[in-house]
Length: 59
Image (cartoon, rainbow, N blue to C red; front, top):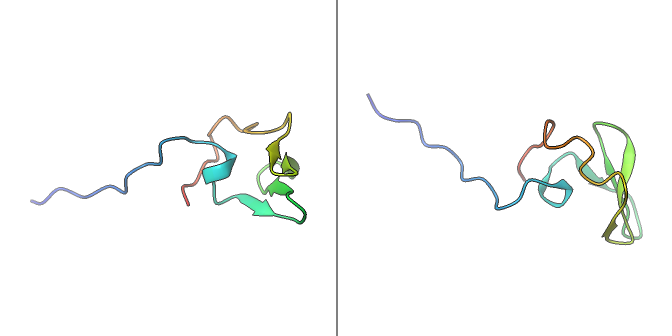
C-alpha cells in the first residue's frame, strides 16, 4: 500500500489564508461563515479569526 500525500499547511491559520474570506471592496474582507467583516482597510478588525480556525480552508 502506498501512503497518501497531504497538502502542506500554510504557516498560519488565519483569515488572510482562508478561502472563506471574500474580498468586498476598498480593502474590506468578509467571512462567509459568520457574515462579518474581518478585515477593513487591509487591517484586521475585532472579528478577525472569530471562528478560531474551525471553518478554516487553505487557499
